[in-house]
Image 1 (tube, helix red, strand yellow):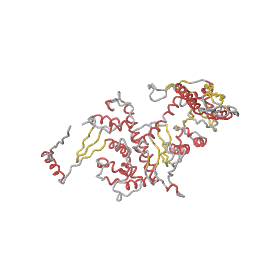
Image 2 (image 1 turned 90 degrees about the vertical axis):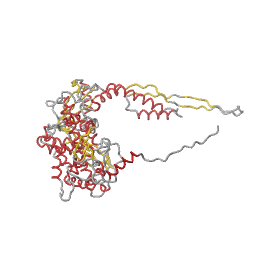
Image 3 (image 1 turned 30 degrees about the vertical axis):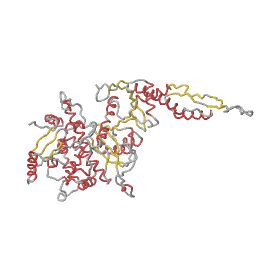
Image 4 (image 1 turned 180 degrees about the vertical axis):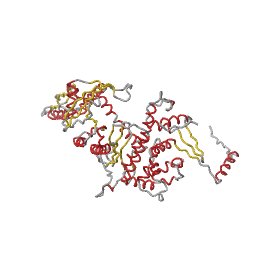
Length: 589
């Protein structure tokens, strides 16, 4: 069939008459001298500013650091606020320090900073100058002064239980100043990375919180600072802070607290601070292991029941305990063996997993026969040495296989005798559980040992365990602090500015924790939780992330001098309820 070319006539395109008229209207507006500017400011930033006001933040910053009103266009407190607010700008990402002014683009700076500042007023040079001045006065002490205001100004009950821990923060850059002779500042260097990045330089931070997770002390440390070293300095700090009231407080930390030097610091004080920690396996001639064995031998367990926050949870484990008084480095300390009921199935699964691992290793190690018996025996010895701590008794046998290799071709007069070839394969004879090791493994898996100087007359075993399990509040803080929108990585090149930046970002964390604590405290006063969570679900035990996600639905739109609350969900009443939960009461209307 013959193909024919079709010619399609295309008319010349021209704008519609209506479109032209609309464009002319817009053009006339563009030529006008006056423009109406619209900005949209997230409500969460206004809430954070209110929290800073309650903390008397501006007064503390402006009175603490060196500055000249005639030389600073933006006061130090406002520059500091811009950094503190940065983690709240975006729910999904962090705004780098050198682009903070970009983060506030399209927002009402007058609403946030109470003056008609320009975005460029918050440039990295101004922020760098601020960090230098904060570093001059000492960021650690300044943070504590701000944090302690939370108890008075937010009417938070004083906690007599304190938690301490450290974490690491990865940094990019060479930081050559740290390697110069005579340098005495913050040492950005390699160390034990809790972020699994040993190839990168880092700094450490130490934090003290109360039982609610409210941070009261932060310290930026050299990248190679050990946990036990910082805990020692933290004990000194608490002794200086609490004075002769130290004995009324309990300090909780991980097993790095428990060593001879730290105990000497504790008991050097006239009123030794009380402590609770996990007893290290190697401490004081393996006293933890000896006490554990004694507990299982006596079998005199006290049923202390469920010891977690949500006792109605289906996953809640039940515990038993035995308490012993033992002499440790000249002091009588209380060792509590805690036994849980949860690991039984876990132990069975792990035993079966190890069985399969050994069988696979046997198959891999002995997949070919050996040329001589001594080689086979050596391979068996090496294999058994590798698995000497196994939960199984492994029995391997060497067998002998003989084959005759005849000459190829027709037999000749001078036919050589056939060659006899011997091979020595290794096979598994028996794989049985070692009852003693399995018993020990089960005991170690289902139990742990706490060490404390809190007398039993003051706190029973269950209360000690409950206090220790609250150590997760500081772990939660570190998780929030190290999210991408906070400080997962730090890009500052000057070590002295890192300490000041970390202090301000800990203020951001303080606001998050206060929001979480106050909201939960007020929710407990409600007869039933309000249905203001996403999809109309009841708001129960909210995290800081949950609250931020709910606030992200609301913003303040500014047009000229007029303000309008804009709600993506269309439920402004939810915003009123959120503000009420935070103690920031508002009148609907």
